[in-house]
Image 1 (cartoon, rainbow, N blue to C red):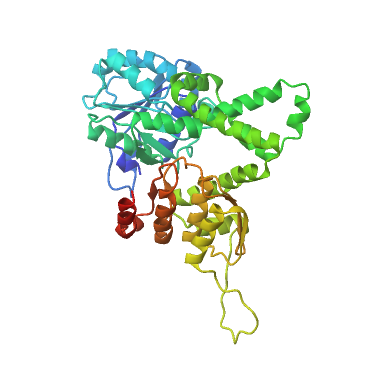
Image 2 (cartoon, rainbow, N blue to C red):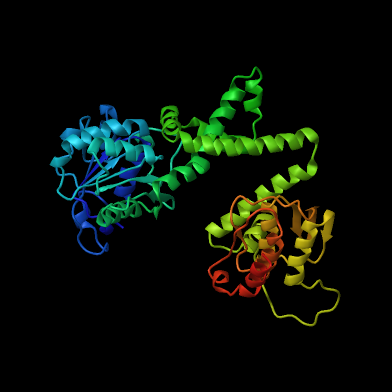
Length: 461
């Protein structure tokens, strides 16, 4: 991997966990003074010097002692000369000051210098860049590695921190493509998967998937720690509590900066969460078992369903793994078969049984349900529209019907995989609802003709 990174001098500004782990990952990949001796890496590569700037001289000394960096200094001006790639790994609210310093001395760097960062909010850092440079430089590629730990400091550096993790780059329309490619090479050298998205989209997504969970963990631990029986609470806390609240041990200053920098997106995600908690609270107060079951069941299956989409595995296989663990089959030639067997259910009937059960009043028990990819997609779609569904388990499904007009608007497009029957039946079913719905599917389904359903619906208004 080191052959993909051809930088003469790499400067890391901020030698904490993130910056230190970047240096460690590069060293493990073979990047450093010994690059020209690497064999079997696609030929000789340019020698790369790894430098670090940090306000704490002890961190610099520790980084040199650990073999992560070649040299370092507490002053940025002393290190920027000849740098070909500068990585800003400082806290978000410290980024403005660092960029001002960098703008004053970047002319001493290599002519083709590229600058990138690791901040977990991008809009605030883009504003800092514009303020420091007068515009968004074409050689500045904002980025964010989706990785971290509750530990801090260069002593906690982990060479595996970015391996098989995602790094999001947010280049602007006028960002130099060559600069983006070089930053991509940096992270791929560390074993990361590199993605690209717009700055605004990044901040919205991270507010929900990273910032909100950290906010909740900090709040929960603080709430419990201030109670009189706090020792007993923490003594008997189970693994789930420890797993969730582990992130409350993260750097408080760093997360304070993140919440300030990404305030609007965090507040929007918090509003959504509070609305969901309020609905669940009302269900608990009323003893509304159907509402509670709908929420828990929808969340449980949604996690498996979307995980299978992201992993590009079968939802059916994912479901079976969750239910039964890893299954192994050994097949040997056999003789005749006698006795009674249960044949698989019918896919078309399975679709319709769930749809009719969801639109009916009361509880519908379905037997012989086909636990296949297409039918499971129909189950998930109804869960996203507020229908509580138990199962499937060995072909049995219990649907808690909401009536003809009891469906709720889904929060996003309904994904039905490769289920053409589901797509066509949903088109008619949802056309009669009081809300708009977008139906989508996999690459194969989106190429199949839908006119024979869509045209009559258009004519009917």
